Amino acid sequence: MKRIINGKRYDTETATLMGDAGHSYPSDFEYWREELYRKKTGEFFLHGWGGPRSGYARRTGQNEWSSGEQIIPLSLKEARRWIETYLDADKYEEIFGPVEE
Image 1: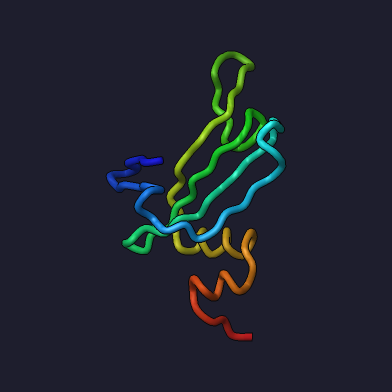
Image 2: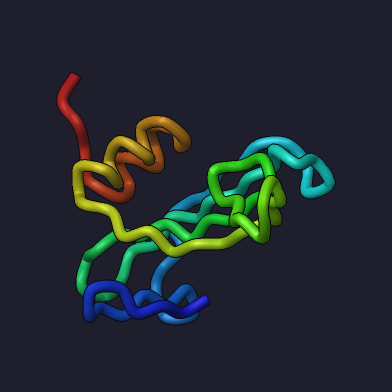
């Protein structure tokens, strides 16, 4: 997926996949999936998609919702928080370097 957001290009084909997370199965209305990417510039972004009762839902009419998909730019702080939440400590240190005990 490719998007231009605030004059910057975000492309899942050219960025590096750092990790992914999700909930449930694609047939579930609450299903969601997110992939964290890092651009060559070091910037992070999420590529996320989900069902009609997920945070990625899009409105298609009055009281009508459908599955949706988005690219969401992340600050370094937001990327760290996402990684701490969804990935393990080894992956965190692989991306950001060793952390003191």
